[in-house]
Image (cartoon, rainbow over all chains, first blue to last red; front, side, top):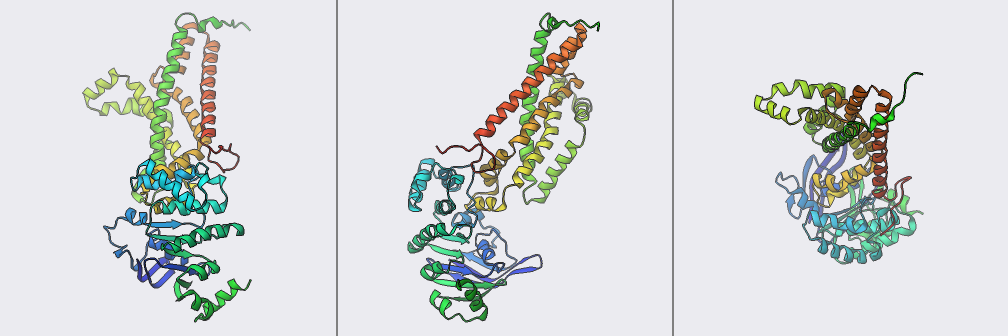
Length: 242
Length: 241
């Protein structure tokens, strides 16, 4: 579904992604963790080309992203992206947040878009908030709306960039539950997160990144119990000790 | 004091009609110039925030060129300097169809468009980059993201300075009297010339400008309330509906 081949990226002289090789299969749930500045957000932002790469190639659904004839808009329509800061449209109601892209990109009728929106709000557990504005919702509710907004485009892949890092502790679970449900339905997901409990329970594979490189990858059990690299052990001991 | 007040000059003779025509012309030239300024301001303000260098430079050139020359000079330029460059039939047509009005409206709109542009640019630049990325990542094009997300948010944020600029535009329409557009100031001067009652004539003008500007400020305050973005500081929250 997604393939990285010798991917390198620089910000000026800063080498942020180094020789990334990665394959993500359809239906796979991959958790990416690592210290801040390790390139994990950059990695997933390259998949829908929010960030360009300078060397190597990324394929999504078999199509190379460097292809000059690539329809960027069609690519992005197939890839849901959930941000740390939610980034809902503050001037629109929850319903309008969900219907904008389906109507403008997929050319779905308003009625149909609203029906999809209602169904998705039901699925993320806030059917009664469709007329509210984002500011009237809690952080956890806003992030669930953001997930529903991405799902409204019926994406093939969902990317999550630290979806719970901006949330109060008691709201983290409601968001993780929605994500767990998605994973169970077979959605292909790449999740940048420090929620190691989620990684253990839901991920098929965990990646550890540091200084722009994938240092370690493995099934959750192997990853957490017998990490191979000393750098991974050091990182895990820091985040799991308390 | 030997000056004898005579307020009746404002409603005897043709004064009332002149004032009314002046108000209508002031409103016509201001509304058209405001629409022109709004279109130019949104376009150039948005272009200056996009990652397309040639368009950014073009928009920056527009702003710096038009805001840094006095409005009076622009009025003279569009009225006296430009028409002789046009083909004769077009010149004739223009001077038979109120060339001074169109030159004045154009000068006013283009000058204030450059000023609107900076206000709109600051509104757009106050929106986080990830808000724009969120719109793009749902598949919207850059143009659609601006049209449906970025500009609607920016316009809501800049209503107070936009009100300022709109009031300035209305008041600056008085400069058009220098190219003989018969707007409100022109008409008060005419009453003064005919009656020699400067105080009364200019008082009438003052009061009318004040009333027009206060009405605009009032309307803009309603617009600000109606379109307030819930959750922003010190704004009247819109109830859920």
